[in-house]
Image (cartoon, rainbow over the protein chains, first blue to last red):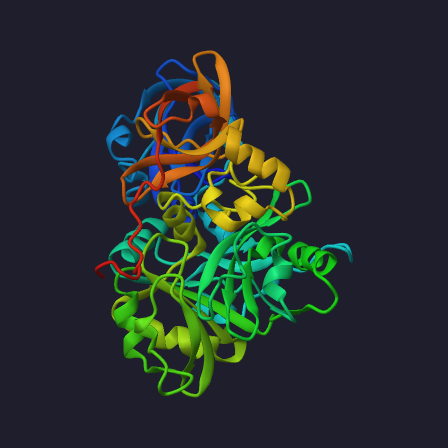
Length: 123
Length: 380
């Protein structure tokens, strides 16, 4: 498995042509207390950089973008009952959705762990 | 940055907020703390204990001159002449057409009127006051004073412990104040103007303190076990639960007081006598009703309904949400908005549009969370 990151603070964990997507620890810290998350339906076709999910904190609603293009194979139903999982375990149980990549070459434009850490340090 | 870009300014407590771990955002032209440990925890702490809010961005203004109360009555609908020394009143600054330019607190100090106006419009307010008050009224904008709000059921015990004395030894102590009373006090020889008031629906105090001493006072208050610093985020969720409007969101210059459900701010004498900006329009709305009304909206489900969401009855658009979010003390989303008066009765079922979905709403009387003010004549 290889994990990549976007400039919008999504992570994508890739295994073969499938991947799991969520938001980073940094992103959930910035959002604060998360009260609602809306994940895409199975079968939804996502385009890299397009709207994929919504995360709502006490204060505001924010979009989660698709790090790469693909078709959704699973949404995290656990967030429906406990959206705060995104705060408590953003890079684990607080994942948003899984998808099948339609163009794995898009991963080339994303950051690896070291690059993302450097990016955060520059913020 | 171009030269005409306004500079974002620092509050007297800027460094203190940062040391306390605040996340700072720009609001009303200032760097302000949006949260410290988190909005949810801060909100609940304030409802159960006491929270300290820095509201120094708000405008503190003295109006000084002969018969200043009568003169102010030309532009506010309250009975300011009847306000006794040491008493305060919520009122509305009215444009010439009766639209709300701001909401404000007016205190009779015994020497002059002391008003607190919203930070985002304070310079506009001062300009408007200058234009509409006669030249023998002096307008002093006290921008050398910080303003702290200590709010919550344990605010009184925390405040009682730090050694605040009345300005004169035989005057009542700070814990003797009732809701909407105010007075001058001393803390370590520092003059404080303290009122029993606030914006959370809880018992609490607002404390005007010279900017040089604000940090020492904030530190002394936060040293009390009941008190934690609370950011703007929780201030907003607390006031929303308390049903209190926020200027620039729930109120603006197109809205008159009756539509805003603030008719209580139009005093009895003024209803008979008129003589304030927009009196014809406002008194007509009082007699005949307004076309729209500010209401509470309870939200079904978990999806927050936020400012700007349109409100429908079936296919008919009947209103708009002006404030909305998650209510930590309720554990569900709530909202406030304006709906056509025909749809404003409590229990009316409506829908809001959020991301192309319809979210069921129920019109609800305000506040969502009962006020717990320390009113005179009521048990504590």
